[in-house]
Image (tube, each protein chain N blue to C red):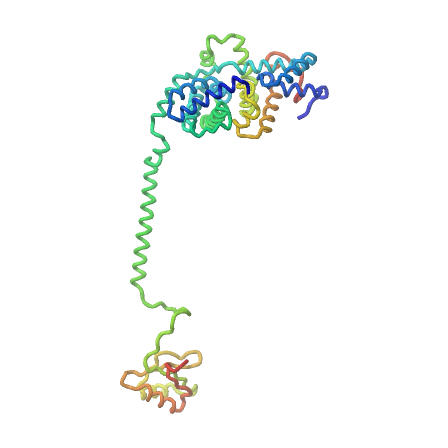
Length: 194
Length: 211
């Protein structure tokens, strides 16, 4: 954890304390500061905007209810991600993870400012992640996307660190074999690992 | 986990270090070592380039549009709504179930009450006697009599009639009868003496004197 992480965690804890005292302004600040990363995290589970919004709101509903009982055993971000992960899995069970929009609408939805390079990168990533299981996608997002440590991911997913390591390893091996071909290269290596 | 033959220990170490280096969470020493290794290992360089691209792709903002303001508005509105968990016991289905259970218990209690009253009113003595119950009190002046096996029924009846006695129980397993005076006018003591002197009566003992 670097200095920025420590500062940001201290701010989050202060916001949680205010939330425990029914301060809705604090809830709004925390909500906005986590909205982007939770959105991105949840797109690894589902592409449905309505489900993502529902999960984020469920997550903050729980955070609001339990703000007073947060004892600081982990960082606030780890705690919130754990809640979002469990709410996300629950939503997946209820709604399924199939996209509801067709490709044409997806094209419209893509931000206008999205450069061709970014779009290509998204496409490359999306096709690679399709080959992974939900748990492997979540581990990849938490480690590479959010920047959590193995210990944090274990707390979020409520599983042993060894399980996280195994999921990360297998996800990386799969991506290593698949991504070069998706980028138009021929895979140079077909082994399981380096 | 298997590694190809051309992978050295350093490549394995580089593979493990890459995610944490990309996160800026590797130590300075680990970072320096990785950069040194990448400079001389083409395979790991290619792997690192791909990992960097993966990291870049994963850091792009979400392309699924979810409006934070709209979401926050919904959440705040939800906070103003009564807690659904508090409402649940008051829900219609909950009420219906509780009422049905209460009704079932009342019907059961009523049934048990009626049955109890009915059994109590039947009362009476049971057709059996337990070992802990005391024996029924013998009739006043009762005598236990064992007639001889050769005594005829006519003689036995005539004897009882003459002494104004009647059989109140018996014969038991050993052929004993319990007899008692027909009326209080006849004295049991006199009947006892007569029985003892009568031929064909093997035993005559007052019941009260029986130990």
